Length: 83
Image 1 (tube, rainbow, N blue to C red):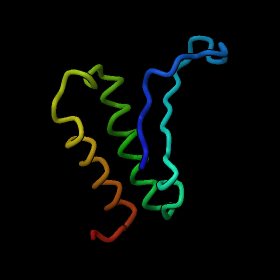
Image 2 (tube, one colour):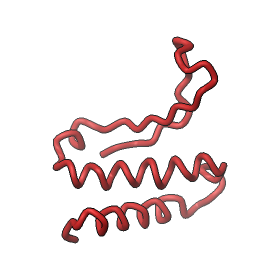
Image 3 (spheres, rainbow, N blue to C red):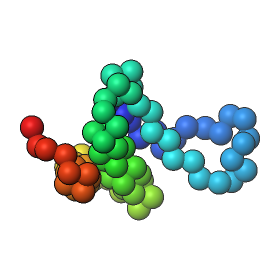
Image 4 (cartoon, one colour):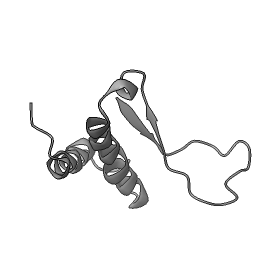
């Protein structure tokens, strides 16, 4: 539904050395209920973006599992029912 994009170039020079963390939400994800989409965004930003900041994004094999734990915590914090 969404994807963390850590290596987009600053083609227009707008960032001037600042960090940019971008998550693209797909055409199906954009129609999700906001609370469920928030959990997905937590997965991408608090899961994969933190892995990227800690330079672990390319070295670890269990990245998705770790990010899914963040997603699960977001679901609990938002009070979402598990399927």
